[in-house]
Image 1 (cartoon, each protein chain N blue to C red):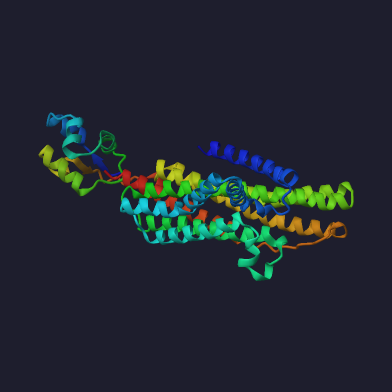
Image 2: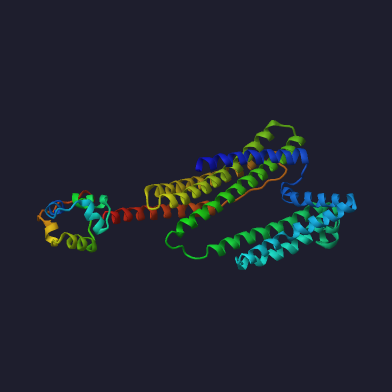
Length: 76
Length: 326
């Protein structure tokens, strides 16, 4: 997928653990893990909104597009 | 739980087979349906004996007669006190009134020929009249239970109420399947013994017995698959409670669809085989009964089960997709 998730780097930068972020954003650690690994099929605006608010960052800091469109197995 | 249910139904089948032996060979019933009037018959005879035994017995019999007949009214009173009255409860006083009338007739069976059914005024028809009374009683009782159930679950379930509805329906299915298994097994077994006595007695050829046994098996096979379909329905309902939106729910629906399709095949083929058997053995039979079984019920259930399993598969995929959206 062209969209890359940089949540790991932002968490280190802001000195916050994933557990603390889960509590603030109100998602499970399993879901956060899915998001960090880039395996999520989508993210709700409300979730991105909360992450950006609590990590004091922009959407572009967390999600970047490298322009390479990889066709996923289930889309073929 | 499903394995326990299957074991229970097998035991029921065996028990009802033994009951059929008891009723035909020991008690000497001439008609399999007379077992339905037996509870009332025994109560009537018991009360009559008690009444005629002594003056104390007479008073006791009268009290028991009133208490038994008033039981539906007593239940109605309890429901009124607990503020749980509903529209079907109107049947309870009707049931009580009918019980008063019916039990009096069972205590004095000769009155049956005078008071009801003038065209059946011969005493030999008393067992049939007793059966008629019993049928009306069971009709009223079953009508009350069904209407009460429907009025209790009349709204579309919301939130976690779907689970409660599934549990209620699974309990209803288990009770109905149990009753169906017991009664149908009893009736077809009774008919087998009746036919064995009829055909085997008159013309002692072993081929008659083979025909009767094959006919019994051909009659029992569709019933067996109907029971298996009902059990698969229970399994599906339980899966909807414990594994909602998971693979087990979809697999339970798929299994129900498979069993329903097998039920259609078995019913249709049994019907063909039964008619063919009667055609082959026609010179040995006293009466021939050709049936054209359209198997609509198992066919409709099979299609419904296939639609439900498709719907569950789509729902499960949507649910999993939804879970992958953070």
